[in-house]
Length: 427
Image 1 (cartoon, helix red, strand yellow):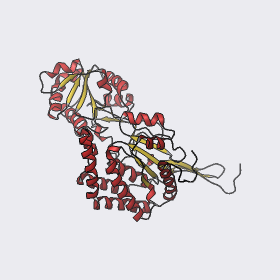
Image 2 (cartoon, rainbow, N blue to C red):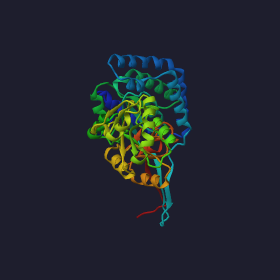
Image 3 (cartoon, one colour):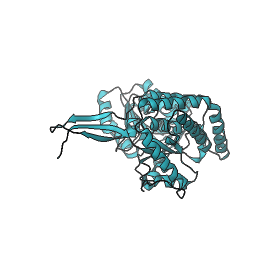
Image 4 (cartoon, helix red, strand yellow):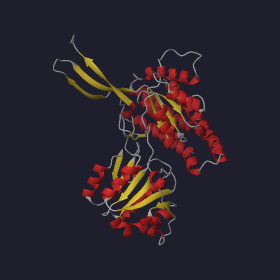
């Protein structure tokens, strides 16, 4: 699709994309101070208009509960005054981060005297397609603005009222700061047609980033003509090695699974080395029960269940590939570290895997053999997060290997261009 001037015969989605392209050209060359001022204005506006945002969110929550939506999804949808303040704080954190635009990735003077620099530049117009979480609306807008991009936000219909209120607050704040309001837009429409149009707006939208469940991500990857940065589901594993500190292992397991089970960096599978199963599994099963977690167990784990207070059911093949996003976890006993790695390779979504071990050799082998975006040694899977990594709010966690992998912060929202400076040089 060519980027011709918009006209009234175009659909609302394509008109929005044209406006975003114009806004992207305006904000791309802005100095850091102008972008940071706009971000500070956004944070202030979020706090000042919290009540308005929460009231809109209440409408979404009421509709979700009337539709029988699970409480896990309702939790992801919910905005409280405390959560709005936390979102505003995240925006200020983004403002405090270095501006990646203009950073020299590499540079040199060539033998012929030409000065060559590779510098970071904005991607342009970024489309975000996401489910439920209205906090993504602000996170995505803040990161895109800081990195000099315009953003088109297409949230789910379940968060429509929340997203509408949030985007209005963001646009008002950006305009008051002197930047084009169209740098932040909610994609018009609630039907799937608007999503389809966004996915086919090649030439107007530079990249799409889907955030949500496996079905959403697969649909965008398979049907989009716009380049896609694939953010994957989180079928994360915790492997407890033969040489593990049991207290540490229990703490890491419970934090990885139960601290917030509805997020993509929550653990979904526990693997336990057979040599430590007798000592570890009774403690682990009781701890999981105390945390309200049900266990989908293989036969070897089931053998330990009767002596514990755990809620345990036999695991099926489907359990090993399931991202529960709930108080459920699959569990198996493995014969070796290599067997654990083989299990992970077969079933992982490539997000995050953790090993608990006191053996440096085991930790080294695990990190060498496991091919996921993040491999944690003696640490919770919950640390795979842009904020925890010091990136500020993340745009998503990419599980692909091109352009970006893992938590995507500001640098991942840029491309590069080469600047060639000569003195009358000809070839």
